[in-house]
Image (cartoon, rainbow, N blue to C red; front, side, top):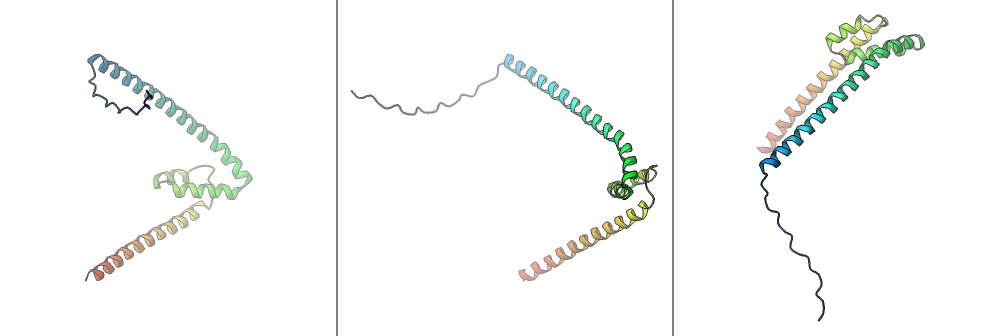
Length: 142
């Protein structure tokens, strides 16, 4: 008699299992452990990042001294870019820095004015475009 070829058996459906109280407690303990480990890893990463920021801040002063001696224009450019990115409060604080070169104020004001004009122009262009777009769509509808 010939042997039958093996056939794929029907997939067994998994039965919904209920979790016993002891399994529930084990699961809860495991989840607590995962949360504690994640918290510890997170705190260690925060400490490492804080230490890295402090190391950078500690080194920037020496770098600014070196930069002012080697390339005064680059030092001025650094302060201009820094102040442009800073909030108004931080900009006032940066302006008091002892190593800040003269002439930065004028460049920062010009650049901030230019950026403000560009932002205003972009906003106005967007408003005009949306207004003309809504007019065009209302004309097409009629």
